[in-house]
Structures are given as structure tokens and as C-alpha cells.
Length: 106
Image 1: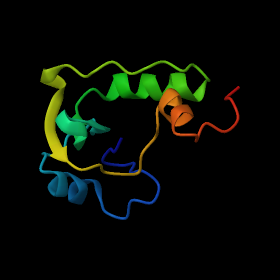
Image 2 (image 1 turned 30 degrees about the vertical axis):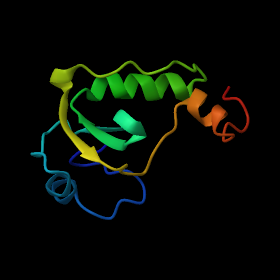
Image 3 (image 1 turned 180 degrees about the horizontal axis):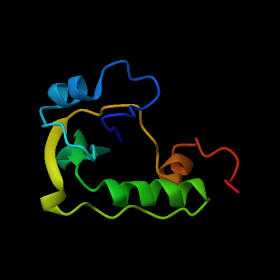
Image 4 (image 1 turned 90 degrees about the horizontal axis):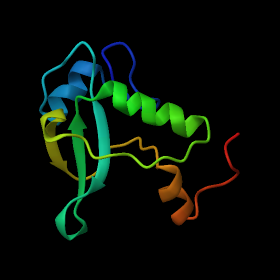
């Protein structure tokens, strides 16, 4: 997720620069980036307007609730971009399958 006043750790560009690079207009509420797979296992990033839904999902994961994300509604997807954009947070079940689960969250 990125917002006008808060960019993810490690991102050196401004919010406006990130929006321009992605090809979306800056919004006061910001954007959520969902990295997923398209047809033929093509890596894609969805630029999603559903900030509250994404925050809720991340909060659940931080509390140890391994819930799978639902797909955003088509109206919430502003842009589909080829390739993954980081930094990324793996879903708990995806991290476990990839051998990156570590210790359980408490």
C-alpha cells in the first residue's frame, strides 16, 4: 500500500512519482498493490482502490489469522500491470507453502 504521506519502507520515490510510474492518478486515500498471477502463471500487479479491505486483511495476518484474500471487485481494479512490484507481503498460507513461514504469529 502507498499513500501521499506514507510510502512503504525501502521505496525512495515520492507518492506522486510512484503514481506516475504505475500510470494511475494520485488519490488522497492512496492505492493498494496486489501481486498475483494471471493466465499462464503470468506475474501481474493489480492497482486496487480497496484500501480499507487491504488494511483489514493485513491486520488479520498481523494478528495470526491466516485468512485468504478475496479477489477485488473489477470496479476496484484501476490497472493491471505486468510484473510484480515490491515490496511484497506474502499471504500466510503462501509463505508457508514457499517455506517462508517461520514462527507462528501470536
